[in-house]
Length: 345
Image 1 (spheres, rainbow, N blue to C red):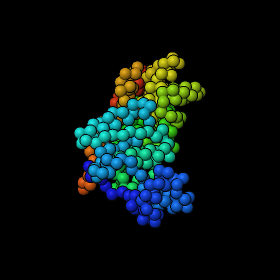
Image 2: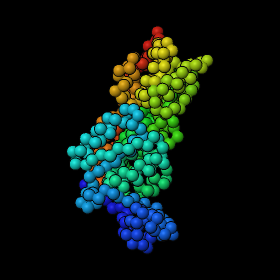
Image 3: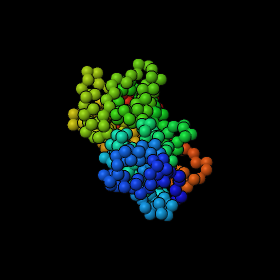
Image 4: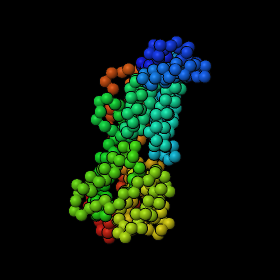
């Protein structure tokens, strides 16, 4: 893959009015360069968005042999299938994938971006579209080819391969409402710095508001995406004086934690309370009862993201974003609000 234009050492040299050798010394052995000169070099680096690239072979051959993927977490399987499919397409093109994680920390994401680029990554897969202006400016200055996934927006300035999280959550909530549930709670992921979690919560809210008929979102608990946090949130929700008849979870890991807590507390699913998830990871089909959830097209998303990123890196024209569809998978964890009743769908 041909390398796209990005700030070079020579560009920094011209802007800082020092030699490339001085810049190298400032980066590798700063004590040997006067502080005033170091400050001028650093100002030039920041202005240009330059990152020292230690991928020497890639530079020498003027080819991109490495791409980076930066995902929020490696602690559960929600990104696994998509990243695997992404890597398989890259491998067929002779490109190696480097994977990093952020822990949902936008500052750490920027550090990971800098690190991957410094190690020769010629393009990036990014998850979600919420990131600080500093990160966006850095990517723009570096002219970094990247694709944003696990979400979708109509933005001609960015390349997306993903789905509409708000629409998917809206449609899932319609299914919950159709089963007669009117008192609904949600265990959501933290919405700060996470557009996917925020959009899923917005989708649930808007579906309930549009439905009316006494339906309400009585409780929202935001937690981190771990089994134990889902369990703790479910316990808090069900301890209220007027517990819900359905709990919508922001992903399958939270839902599995909720179901684990329900089992320990003797709460029957779906007879006493229904639970739904989001993602349809492998766990969803094997928990008891099987989890009703939103199926995310992870494999197709990963493949398409790799194909579009490779096209963008190669300078192909007419590369456009792709919106994929989700599907609500009805399983036994969702039942009527009245265990004797029937669903409306």
